[in-house]
Structure formats: C-alpha cells, structure tokens
Length: 290
Image (tube, rainbow, N blue to C red; front, side):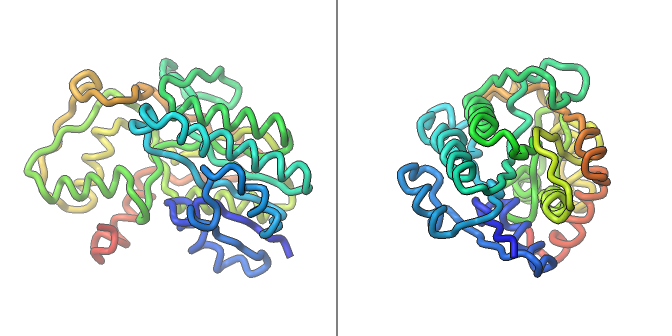
C-alpha cells in the first residue's frame, strides 16, 4: 500500500486533502502539521521522515505570509527552500516521490499573456524568491519530482482572500480592493482533486506544471463576485496598487497557462466562478466559513 505523507496538514490544501483522502482507501495517508513536522526545524526533517517512511511526499506546507516574509527572511527561506532541499535529499536517498506546491509569485508579473512553465522566472518579493529557490533545490536533488505552481488559493479552511472579504464586508459599508493585479483564483478543493488525480493515475510525468481555475480577473472583480454570490450588501471600490501599498511588491499580471497539466493528465479545470459559487453556497449559507 502506497504511504503518502502530506505536510502542512492544517493548511488550506492539506485540510482539503484530508477530506478527500476518505475516498482513497487504497492509500495510507499520514498528515503532518507544524507540530509533527516543523519545516523550520531543519536538523530534524531527516529523522522525522525516517520514522514515517513515506513512498510519496506531498509538500503542501509553506511559509505564505507574503508581507511578513520581507522581515522574516531566514524563516521564510528555511521553510520554503531549505526544508524542500532536505525533503528532496531524503526522497532521493530513499526512492520516494515528491509532489511540491509552488506559486505564481516566481514570476515578475510583467507579461501580458498567461505564463507557461518554460517562461523565465523573476520574483519581485522575498516570498517568491524563497519559493523559486525551493523549486530549484527540488529539481536539483530529485529531477523526477512534480512541481505544481498555483495562484490565489482559497478554501473553507485557514486564512485567505475569500474569508477576509466576507468578514470585511459584514463589518463595513464600503471597502477598497486593488483593481490592477490580474490573475485567477484557485479553489483548494479543486487543487486537491488534481493532486489526487495525478497520484491515482498510472503515469508519473515529472516536471513543473501550472494549475489555477479557468478565467482572468482582478482582486477587485473577485471581491465583487464574493459579495454578489454571498448576498452581502457592501460597496466595493477599486484602487490601484500605488493607492494600496504593501510591504511586499505583488505581480501585476500572474495568470498561468494550464494547457500542460490538462494535456498531461487529462485534467478538466472548472471556471473560478463555479468553484467560488460552490464554496459560498455550501458554507456561507450554513455559517461555516467564518
């Protein structure tokens, strides 16, 4: 029986994988949260992996506080880069496979067309830099691994844009949201299904893949859709990135080209509107999401 270790078990993707694992009794899952496998404890990663002995590692754990990473550079690099290197080395020595989740922030956002896996990387913030270093370390020590870059992830679990907007809209009559950053949201539910489709398939095609939901949208339009689908009355105003400065610079255009993962694994990708509506219908109505 294939033993699958999922890091970042309490995060958005880890939590979705935990829910989904009930439908895969043919696999043995081990879900490790920060306490069970602290990715910043570099000296102990080997020991923990030796005890678990996974055949496949899904590295869903990451340091994702984009702005905070600018001041916590060592911690962000430890989790997003050095821990990935340690995982890759262990996997290479123990004939294990790795699926690693990365980000659209490895790009600079200057493109006018969706980025493919072969486009040059050039992160503009420290978070993106550490994630890129993690990708490079993994491919160096374990070239046959799979890396999936994604963007704008949200779910019923953890902290994310959708839940933040719902809270702000309920507390305020009017909010302002950046309108000049373009990308595509990603339902963690959909992403988890893609990972399990890859794991459950009989083919292992290594390399870098891009995955997000279908569609192109700004954060501003995404916020308006959240408002409209949830039935909250709130005025949403669009502002520029210059009007809403953050510690870490964000890419202006981070749309990902998903054709490679679609062709390689016969993946059908839902539109962001459908996935968002499903989440809000299932959880906002039941008051479970916030």
